[in-house]
Every structure is written in C-alpha cells, then in structure tokens.
Image (tube, rainbow, N blue to C red; front, side, top):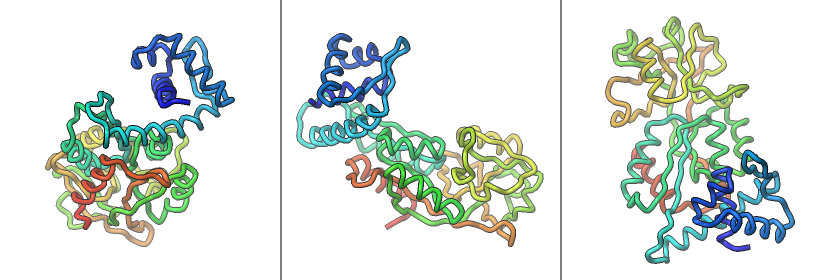
Length: 306
C-alpha cells in the first residue's frame, strides 16, 4: 500500500468516477483501475462497486476510506511543515449550523494564508450533515449547539460518530428579527407576543428529529411556520413577512448587515428559555491542523473568550 494509492482512493470517492479521477490525477484510467485492484487484492477487500453509472463505496470501502483520509492528512501535514516547493494544496473545511460568527471566523482564518496554496471550504448545513462531515473527515471542525432539551440525544449521536464536543460559550436565546418589525423596540419578547408572526427555522431534512433543530422550543405549536435552507433567505423572510427566529443572539453585522436586531427572549412557565451551549466538534484522538487551530482561535477572539 502506498500513499499514492491512498490518494487515488480518496479522489475516486470524491468524484464517483474513475474517468474523472484519472483526469484530476493526471494518470490513465487503465493505470488507475489497475492500481486500485492491486490495493484491493493486497487488503483482501473490495473498495468500490463498479457500474455503468460510476463507482460507489462498499461497506468495507467506506470504513477503509476513513483510515486512508487520516493517514493522507497526516502525510500532508508533514509535507506542509517540512517540504519545500510542493505543488499540492492542503485542504481545510468547516461545517456549521447557520452562524454568521462561524463564517466570520473562517474569513479571518483564511486571510492569514496564501489561499492559492490551499483548498478551503465552509459549509453552512443541516445539523446531521455537520456531524457526518466531521465524522467522515469531509470537514475538520463542526460548529453546533447543545441545550438541556437536545443534549442527551446529541451526545449519543456525537459518540456514535466518534466525535467530541468542545465548549465555547453559553448564551440565552434571543428573538432575531428585522429592525422595523413591530416588536423590534421591545426590551424583551415573550412567546405570546410572537403569535401571529411567522416563526422561521432552518430545514433539517425529511423525518428529522426535533433534537436536530437549530432553534429552541422546536416542539412548540406555532400558528405560522416557514422553513428555510440558508441565512440569506431567512433574512429576506424577516423583512418581507415580519418573520422571526429564536437564536443565540450572537450576530455578525459585518456579514449580516445592520438591518436586524436580537431582542432577549422572555420565558414563562410553559415556554422556558434554554441556555444554548455553543461549541465545536472534532474527531476523537486527533490533533488540529494549523488552520484548525487558527480557526478555533478566531472564533474565540470574536466571542471574547480568553
């Protein structure tokens, strides 16, 4: 087994095609196929299912891919530190729930590097995909939150994915809305005051659990609800429909603009405010890369964490 073969496996899995992988790797398709078959024979497993539509990982192949990515990532780290004049690009990715501060930290991190020498990726996505991305090494770091309601099932999910949670900050929930919303001037907003306005939330996919929601009080009954896939759409709905969402209150005006406000959520006996513990997840027993360390430092700086 060679590092080149590991790179072949990783690239084929990312493209889903032997032909596309061969083009990216600057090798002939027959040579690539032969190398993969030699590795499969050496390991005694079948890594890919082959069909007219392309290739897909077998169960053994999916498990092997995790080890391949770990080994090749360590190789890249050594080359980054010691090699001179290398032409390969180091990859770094972050997957996050929809937090503007997480994107702001990514921007600050990326500015510290010559981006022509790196392949950076920032993915604002569903909670389950944040966990999956970090578990499969698609991203090095994931950003999400825990609360009293979701902590137990979320920690179980993280454990099953071989991930560990690192605390960043605790915060109370806020009502996030347009600055010209009728309730924008309130010192605090109760659940009853929100009746009649659309409650906005991020879609988590079909058959998703309430525990995967990015907003507190996800099990409450709302008279009007609208789901969105991205922050830009949600902000548009706040302006166009006087919608609102329940969030951490950590808002980055540099990215979201100054047309929105976060007002403290006033809880009551039936609608308890739940402290949101925001943190990041990484695979267990792994050391953060240089980019990962700087990214976490950038988040802490923005959040005012010593």
